[in-house]
Length: 424
Ligand SMILES: Cc1cc2nc3c(=O)[nH]c(=O)nc-3n(C[C@H](O)[C@H](O)[C@H](O)COP(=O)(O)OP(=O)(O)OC[C@H]3O[C@@H](n4cnc5c(N)ncnc54)[C@H](O)[C@@H]3O)c2cc1C
Image (cartoon, rainbow, N blue to C red; front, side):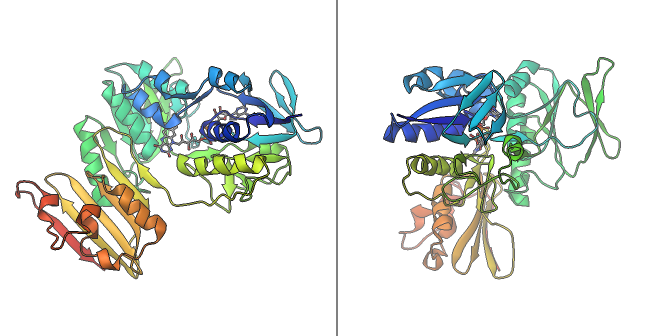
């Protein structure tokens, strides 16, 4: 008899986990899949190209109803699970209860909505799913939008709407854009590129209140200091919080996320969790690469095979066509750290590598990111780079050159100002 496996959440993490499971053990489980969204699994990352008009929804679907049907999954799309009854081993959906032998919680994250007066008004949205994307697409050329948050999501939302002719202002509390991923010079280049698309960027700007028109619709964002930014839509993109409500109510151990061990097991021996809803050894997640590692491990765990999740470094890319940036590791200055910087203002290329104890520990690149993967591997592997140091910033192509010359990398015609500096 196959075991009854119930999964809550048909997001990217559980979709990948089921792929592994069906590949290795197609008959082992009788699967029921709940999803609050009224659809199967899609590549959430690619909502931004959809928003920008570069892809269609159909192109980003990864596991639709037909895929699940082929694997005999009983789908309950559009049905939110409201409780987990651990004593009777069943989950309670809006349309009824389903028993499980083993349960996987994969509820992802919810957008963090700051306690800003006016946040509940019509015309205030987050950026998480197809519905949010549709709202932004529905604005139409000539409308005005304010995006609160100048991180990855906020900038992708801003660029996507701007590409559709919407006048967008980004309001960012920190002193420079993507302050978690970029240093000031890289963020300045990014800001210039966004402004060249007509996006207004306000850094060091504190949102104070969202104002309503006489129909109760958001019509402006007021900043500390009194500036009012008129708008038809406010998009909140200031962060995410793991969706832990079900797990907490069921009495599972929850910190910032649902606490799991290296095998993705929660504090209940029949319940597992993966994706953005989990906390593993104190870490929570916001990028997909580690979630796919979790998916593989959980598929092994469910088959009682050994497998351990190890949280590795991840790199960041912004999916705004024409704004190429790469960021990985720790790029902050500090004692015992050296920075190697390359900057070509004419071509808009900037690279900074941070070295500590002969190891590359961080990299920020703007404009020419083709070597990002190579730098990322050096960071992840903790490789000793002392022998490469003189040419490191020029990437893998220069590692075998007997007499490396930075000029060809810097500029083809030699007119640009090229700066390469090494500072301790
Ligand atoms: C616009 C956008 C762009 C992004 N770009 C990148 C990127 O470039 N690179 C990157 O690495 N990451 C990116 N991310 C993050 C990435 O998409 C997430 O890390 C990933 O989708 C999380 O997967 P998940 O399966 O944990 O959660 P989700 O994909 O959020 O899936 C969780 C699912 O669970 C469902 N659910 C929740 N509660 C319940 C319930 N009670 N009952 C039933 N169903 C429930 C939800 O409806 C949802 O469908 C981006 C995210 C967004 C929104």
